[in-house]
Length: 391
Image (cartoon, rainbow, N blue to C red; front, side, top):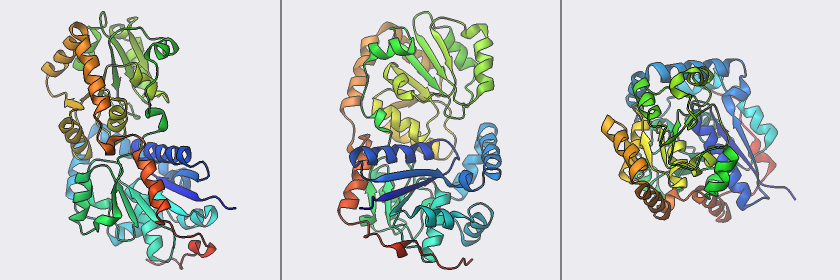
């Protein structure tokens, strides 16, 4: 008996795309242990020297010139990657993608980033006979996600489905699955037990996240939070920005028993369980994880483009507010210190009224449903045959 193999291709431009791939893989395997999943950041895997350099340049651009990122996002919004760009990606970055697929022999490929999605689409156009599912990991539908070779689209909301339909994609190939989150976000843990495990105090708590890259918050905001440490516990999770973590730990402003400065963590689900408010950049994965945990969110300076769209969606759904004035943070700090029961009630409301597409295990369940409906052809060795490379 041969197990079904699912190959998930991602890319490291931001941490959310790969997190979504791992979350979906874990969800699929929890529902059906007989399915074998593998996640690969394709560019880094194929180009371990060049890949990190390109990602570093992108990260620096996001950190220092977010308006440029937004301008590029909007200028290409309605456009798929053109033929020349696809060829350049293949020649420079993904030339060995064909060999990876030949070796791993997947029955299904799922892409969580537009670049590998375009590469696999190109290979399918040349003869690759493996179904391709595209998981759009934001609350928007940028044109770079769209390729005629995609067999099924997995999208976050009905709005995104409608956007794809306006681009002439038949509705039967678009499925509102939500963005997957890891199974550890599917349920809430015991607050008291986690406080003891994490060595945190039992008091109103704010979690401040800079994302996986540790993007910097303004000094005014950090100082405004720090002065409230007498009655509100603050947990700063600054991701991979080790320089910022070291600087904050040495700053007397943050040297308080109720202030905790952390670097990159793999237990964010636990930190969300013991927190009452999340202040964060509105990346698609972080927002979705916060919604899964039912934690109220404040969004700090959304990057023009997909972060703006993400923030608009979660604000409209009642999960978040934009941190666009001092009055917003003042209101929430007052609620935490003086009306804590209202914050607890808000969290319970958010946890109990989730839309189906925000159910944390919905995406994995939908993929399994598609497979059970025969949306995955029977495996044959010639699925992996690819025609000679062509422009």
